[in-house]
Amino acid sequence: MKDFSNHFRDLVKRQLLGDDPRVLVPRGAQDMMILATWRLSSDALRPNKRSRMIRIAISQNALEDYARGSDDARLAGDERFVTWFRRQLSAFDPNHDSPLGVEPPAVTWPVNTDVLNAHA
Image (cartoon, rainbow, N blue to C red; front, side, top):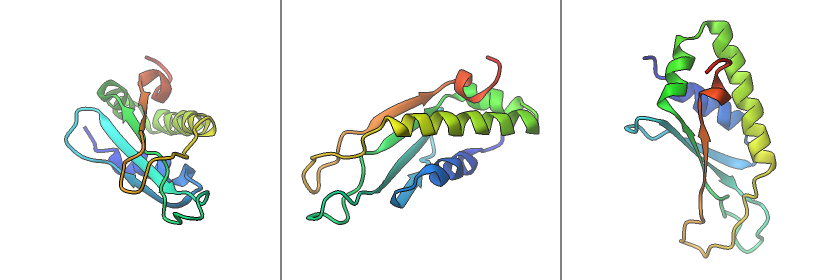
């Protein structure tokens, strides 16, 4: 199966309007994991403070269905994914009170084939 990790990484990164977005796709897991944070500007005492981490977990089944689809089906899937991600972001509070050096609690957003593909 084709590796779509850079494609989804780019889709996520384009939606992050915050300062200095970091979007990583670690390798090795069966499902695709996308990790995203950005610099917050809400804490004057910590100008480099980063948002809570978002973990987007795209299931292997969703990726297989996506890969089997036509170019048009994948383009429609991209639009559904971006719409879903924007909706998730609009309800997400990236702020946290974790002390310097302590990872704030992350949030995981699973993506199944219903989100990514027109038919399950």
